[in-house]
Each structure stands twice: as C-alpha cells, then as structure tokens.
Image (cartoon, rainbow over all chains, first blue to last red; front, side, top):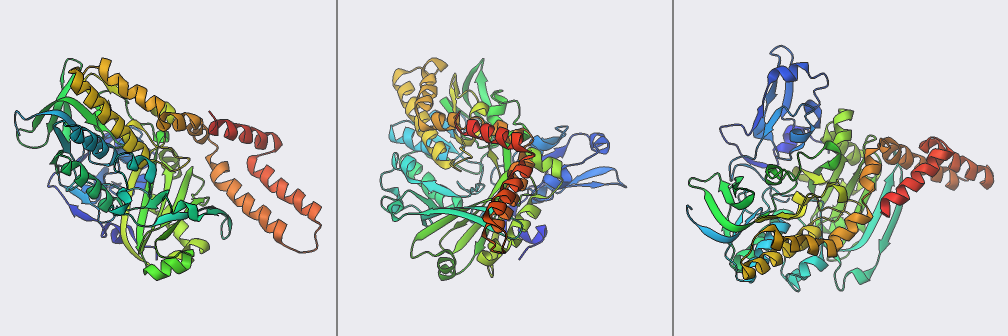
Length: 94
Length: 434
C-alpha cells in the first residue's frame, strides 16, 4: 500500500497563498552545489533542480512547513518563513 | 488590534503555549493566545503519546472529557532485521488505573486543550503569524503580527512557537539548529476497523499498544513507531537530519521500507492512508537548550528543545514548562517587575523539575548519535542481533557452544571488533547516565 508522494500530499488540506513563503536566495549557489540534497531530504518534494534551466524550482504549494530545508540546505540558501496566518497546511488528524 | 495591551502574550497554541495561557488566565492575567494555524493543532503532529501526570497537574481528571485515543497497557520494542524481528515488551493492567498514558491525535487534542485556556479567559487570536518581537532596548514589549495594525503589547511574551522557533532565533537564543540537533519525522494515519485493530494487537475495548521500531532506517540514526488509535494506526519514522542529508534517500521512502517489512505489513494490511504528515523533532537534548528567560520573555516546549528522545516524551515536558512559565508570569505580575531578575524564577523552576533532570541524564545521547556510529547502532547491530538469535534458535545439529561463538562473533563484527564493542558499550552507558 505504498503510495506516490502526490497521493500522500492529496490527503492534506492546503490553502495556498499567491506568494511563496520559500525563496531561493541565489540560484547560482544551487548551480554550484554538487549534492543538491534538498532534492532528497524534503518530505514533500518541494525542491527540484532543472539542468537545462539551471535553476531549482520551488513547489511551495506542497510544503508541509516542517523546516528541514531551512536548516539542512548546506548554504542556507533558502529563505524560509511561515505562510501567512491561516494559510498553508491544515491537518485532519495530526 | 492597535493599542491593545495584555499582561501576557503567548505565541503558539500547542501544549506548551496553551498550558502557559491556561495557567495565567486562571491566575487572573489578561492573556492573548496567538496561533498561526486555522485553529490550534492545525499544523501539529506527533507520534504520539500523551502522558497523564503533567496534564493532571493542570486539569485534574482531564481524561474523562479529553479526546484521547487508547489507554496504553502494552509497550513493545521491536528490533527489525531485514525480514525478521527481535521483540521485547511489557504489558500491565496497572497502567489502566490510574491511566499512565494514551495515544492521541493532535488536531483534536490541541483544539480541546486550547478551548480550556479560552474558557479560563485567554483571548484566542488564531490564523495569525507573529513576524517579530517588539523590543525596547533589550526588553521584549510585545509582538508584531501579520494582521493589519497588528502590533500587540504586553509585559511578558511567552515564546512557544515550536521546533523552528523563528522568534527564539531572532533573540539569538540559537543561531540555527544544526542538522544533528533535529530529526525529521514522517507519519501516516492508517484507518482500519476498530475490531481489526484489536484483534491484530491483542487488545480489548479501549486498551492500546505502542511499538517502537529500531532498524531498517537505511543506516540512519532514527526510530520508527506504530501506535494504535481507536480506529486508526499511527505509523511513522524519524531520522536525524544530518544523516538524511548525507544518504540522499527521501524520507517517505524510509517510511515505505518500514511499511513493507513483513512484520509491519501484516499489521497495516488493508488499511487506508488517511493522512500523511511531517514535522521536525528537537533532539539536541540538554546541551541544546537555549537560555529560558530574559527581560520580558520566556521560552517553552519544543522551542526550548525540551524533548526526551530516549523515552519519546515531549508534550509532557511542554505542558510542564508552559505551566512553570505561567506561574512565573503570575508572580512577576504581582511584583510588577518583568525583568530577567524576576523571570529567572522560571529557569530555577525548570531546573528543579523532571525536565532538567531527565534531559541531563541523557545529555550524552546526542553526542553518541552524532559521532558517526549511526550505521553501526541503527543498521549493523539490529541485523546482527536478528541473525545471532536466528542461529541460536535454529536446531541444526551444530553444538550450542559453537552457536554461542557464532552469535558473539556476529555482534563483535557489527561493532568492528572486540575493542569497538567495548567502546560502544561504555559510550552508550555513559550517554544514558550523564
């Protein structure tokens, strides 16, 4: 009964803001980052590196607000704040 | 909201903040309880187990009305091999009366708990993010929120904004948690009929069971858990963020591998995943605790790294720290002094409590896990232990003496030799008895 991450995130109610609460400060830093660990450690697959565009995309609408990226990005290149009051995730069980 | 003035503002309506707000409101203070979620608990998850003692200190016999899941009568520890398990457990009906602890779900529980603070008179201000602390010189005098005209003033601000504690960071209490000071836990709530859960876990009525899981975390320092709720199971796995960063494995893939383990798969079979969730757990322990009080502020719960990872206790430390901060605020209010001079009493109270004592006992555990032994402790050992017991129990004509030799060799090899086995043993003992 393993599910894809999309199916998993579908179980959470989101109210997404128009504006991202997660911002990559400098895409050049991502370009020089060899491991790009954010592409792995995020529990909701928010970050993805695109080779052609040479940029990290940020699917902030999927963020579950855990804070892992804030302190695990080796270059502290992710500006992280909470979504606006009442926005973001709302759990049903918790 | 402009020009509103409070005796105390609490940031965060989790167990720590709510306990503080409840204590102060009951003591007659004018309190605001601020929460960024749609309602208290909206953003909160835990394993999770709720303990009686510390909540009872605030709300006698709360369990007669609180939304709790099952009363835990049995706690098991499973050391997972690849397809096998070494089990250890303890069951005792004395844990029913008085109840020792329950499984719980935070969305229901936190809302209920916060309603108690509201009934006591705390003003709920939900769907509101505190963006910064208002300061005059070094003194905290209020908060700035993301509402229009959203400044609120108070004599005391209690910071209970959880593990990420951006407010604690703004006070430079911590520069930033290091990846080895936190674990990332991911969890699923899996629905099954009540009777199926009771049959599979050998339970009746409201009895509950918890299983802690060691092993099969891809060599990362971490633990899994499988807890019985009324008609759901909580299954999760938490791993240290520094290990996770190195391994390049997605957290939910670690959860998947635990779900596929034959011993777990049969327990969750046929269940429907109702919710996926994730949260950081502060695991730096004693030596990561920040200063707890200053001029006009105190910090409680996860924001102060108050988690006993060895005993998976957290909410109870949070509740007690909130209560102690609340009591300190009441004393400060009476005295009319809100400087560090008075609020330092909170420090003293925490030091005299089980929070300080328990975290101090295990202060070495953080160093043990951060010292590069994760692979041995959480992968090689569990596998070696399973294999050793398989060999001991297999009747195949090999002499018992020879079997014992093989078992010891397996454990020794997992540690990397006799001296390393001894070293790990001593280090482990010291870490648990600081």
